[in-house]
Image 1 (cartoon, rainbow, N blue to C red):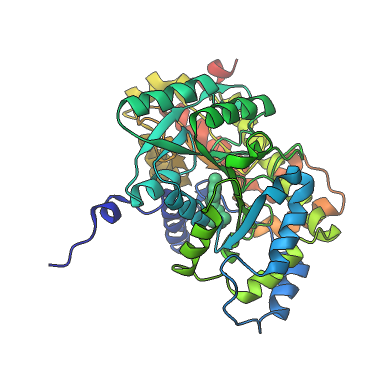
Image 2: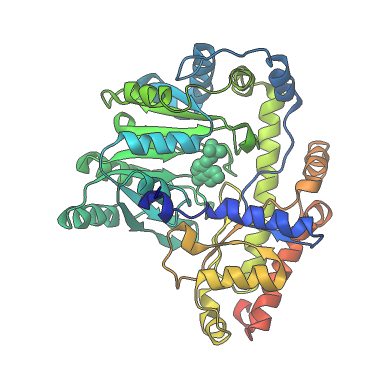
Length: 436
Ligand SMILES: Cc1ncc(COP(=O)(O)O)c(C=O)c1O
């Protein structure tokens, strides 16, 4: 009998893509579905990039594994003002999406993974596929989001070592998915110090780095350049997830790492497709029209996510204000008793109830590393794909970003907030009392 491996069998379909598939299915049946389950920026491809891709359709060779030199140099110069001379201490690689670079880095660094709770859904399954263990680092919540206490990180490392594990790498994500938290400079410094002292390699997932609402770009590489890699790409700030373009900054300080990654690429995806490599050069040239586009999209993300967190807070739900990315990560803890009485006891229960009874797709906190009974959900504020191009144009033509803008271009975002109110009321909760 031909058997599947235990690792493959233990990996569920990526929860984000699963929710998306389900929404497509329901919408195909003509149902109105509120889609807060999938973090896909809805804006159109800038014309300059569409043209560059079309103009390079004849580029058909196998290119160097890391990427064509002109592309790598253009990316290096684009990042210089953002991360300083760290760019000179690195080699670059490119891949069909940063997800594959995260996987390749996990494969390349021996040992077990430290992952923050909450953090993105794919880090732990990737570790599992690589037969390594994942070690949870609980974060603490305050008004500005979820934070890593460097002392807690050190304790987790020590405890894991005492249990016979080999913590050797951590993945950090700022701004982060699921909570939209930006890691502040002093916290980065503290984490970097622990990682230096404990010999932990840092994988800094900066895929949302250019979707920071205050326009600040913060990178932990400033504090630990020799032991930190950056993974990033075009998927988020340019809404190009389906183009599959990722970049890795690989520190020369880790001997042999770049060579190992290039060998890995040569045995897996070989190189990224040619037309995309040439088009990506235009995305990193710093053209004013492209930069203005990125800024405008980020401003609209700030409006949508601010509206969601504000609306949920008004209902009495705990919801830190997002500082970047496309997400909010509310916690229904204030209504735990009422929800339990209605049979809703886990984040999965909240997620299923919302989808089945109200056609509102979300993702359960469980998928982001939270214990089952912690009632968190990840909400994506991107459910206005049908009007996104119009909204962007309107904003670029001077329309103000306010509640009327949300009402006009993203009515489902507002209706989703109302659904949360109905969901709580149906469970017997007094939302007005909580908010007062
Ligand atoms: C936190 C985070 N990291 C990495 C990725 C992967 O992005 P991509 O493979 O499109 O570059 C995503 C995509 O959803 C993400 O949310």
